[in-house]
Length: 149
Image 1 (cartoon, one colour):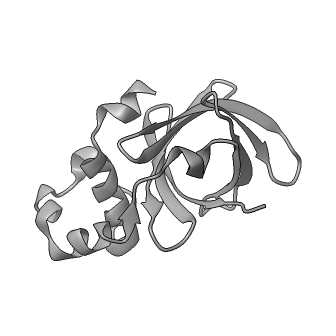
Image 2 (cartoon, rainbow, N blue to C red):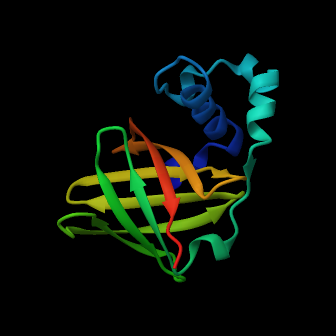
């Protein structure tokens, strides 16, 4: 999970802000406008976010979706492992997770492909978001929902 964690929290958040709050499609972190870091819009958007805690993640089940309609169920375990199932046919993949700097860093392996993303927590709802990379390339915008028991 080193490539994703090499960046710090602010570029991850700014990339997500640009997708959620501006008319821009997904853009790479290297293409971010650094002037936005001090913008009123970005600062206000950051106020709607919070840090994840371990209790938000470990031994919990989440639902992950993307604009393309791919929906999965993700089980996060206390040892840092995870199992992901496609929601309707139960196809299983595995991965790992880590809580770092308040973000949930995830890596999932599917055959020859490696998916990585850092989830940013929303403060007012348990509907969170991320930008996903596939094999190191920008791939998709994600929404993740913590399932309650």
